Image 1 (cartoon, rainbow, N blue to C red):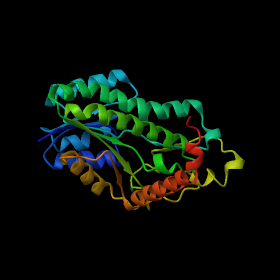
Image 2: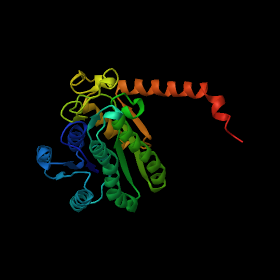
Image 3: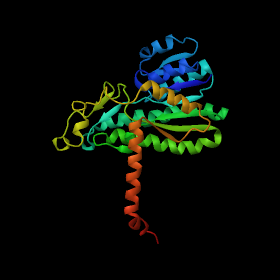
Image 4: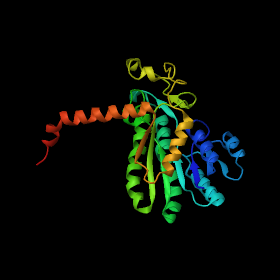
Length: 274
């Protein structure tokens, strides 16, 4: 039996993961900005679940949530940084305050949770970190530049962290889903308030009023949860996993395109050496 600390459990992948972890007999600290939205999950597992309110952008709440988790269950074995939401806007359309909030949640919120959890993992010389990213960090579609940038930043931190923690017995894996039938493209999706007409054909199709993908995504959240449990239980977990056939196809295309471009410009790249 292991102890999981999961952020963003009110809907989507976080909720499915919390339910699956508890169904497997593990302990889970199930968090959301409003704990009442996850109390139903914990109610069915009174001995192994703890529902807590947690806004990851509040360092004080992060510290208190981790303290209560360790007080209730002892050490945290698996931490999952899942809290987040979508934001769509052409780069020029982005509202500064909204972009800052986006990075505060996806990047600084995740690192705040890690800073609170890692001392215990280092002391025990064991632990698993699962940082939920997105295929968008690699595809970078028009209209999602800021969201892609936030997830790319989380991935960069994760890769450095993986190297730093490997000698200490702690693994770090990036989980990059494709499209899943969650509320991500519904209630959890935000966007800039004022579209600019010149971006109607690029960023425009991804705006909420034009997006028809919600409810038709290929990914099953319950299967994603099982995949994440498998990653946590793997003897040698990978640095990154792309969840969903669409995500796998997309990353293969991105890697092929990047390799082709590198080769085309190889002579210019090497021409700058002394």
